[in-house]
Image (cartoon, rainbow, N blue to C red; front, side, top):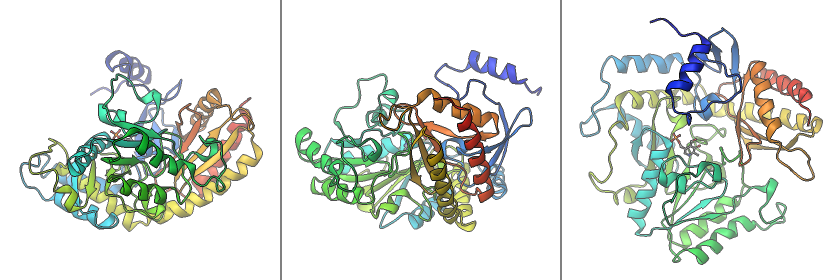
Length: 433
Ligand SMILES: Cc1ncc(COP(=O)(O)O)c(C=O)c1O
């Protein structure tokens, strides 16, 4: 088949894909090839990928071991549905039980994070008999009606009416504290808000509280260490399940631990996952304790593709690679090095209002003025575009789109960080605020 020219690909993309399939960059590269932490465009230009397909390619692009195991599986068995018994989904579920904390043991495998959150919400209602959910402002949980209803950002909530029964509490966004306080003298007003909202807006019993351990799309919002411990006590007091949405924070992303919520010392009742789980394959899932899983009986939930042999094999291979190659540990070590370098940059450039995150999930919030904290929206877009021109891909987030997100494959080296920081430095010099 004849390959299309770059311009043709861009034109045909516009003509044949819906406008909602948007892309980053005014002048987007057409990505043609990937290997570990690098990708190449159709013109042969190499990019250091510091976004990893939106926090997904944790083990690295086209990792040879994962690719080998996938190829073997493709040649052996591709699809049956879970109505037939196959081995790969079982082996994956066993591994998930091994790497998740506490007595989380039984999994339901999906194709995406959205479906994982849908399933977790359904299970919470069935298990508790309650209907109400507490979610965080600035959260992102997916694109179905339920997961949009749990999402606390106006620009990701469209096409209502939403699923009823979701109440939002303030997130632990210390840089822009919703209560105008300063950590640690704030007495964690944001955690107390959970109890206030439950008492004010629900029947005093909830199905679940759902949160990302670090809010990704919302702008790498990282809570104080005690926040989730306090919230957990409140959620239990009102009969709710605690759902940790690990779609971005899972599979070693935050360093040393498998899952983000472990950084905060909590064992959730349900964990949802996707993205890094399959290193780019369409797979997600949710895991819980057997006594909770039992509330969704045989045949009460189903998914045609979820846990198909190819994705299950790829996910297991990705997890084993992360384990074997010490990528969780690398994320902690290189992430700390990276953060230190970013702090040095902050001293140099007024545009950087805040630096936050953990492991290899880092964020830089750009502001026009450090006093007013006015979001630097245009400058954030420019920063991304200029970085791309210099061979570096980074992501963007935040309610106002003024947070740069750094979430590379977990295998990046100090040299990669030095290169990225050098590019950041030169780009920041070019941007006029
Ligand atoms: C925290 C979180 N939850 C859920 C989702 C939805 O996952 P998916 O796009 O796989 O449906 C996302 C996607 O970005 C996410 O970041």
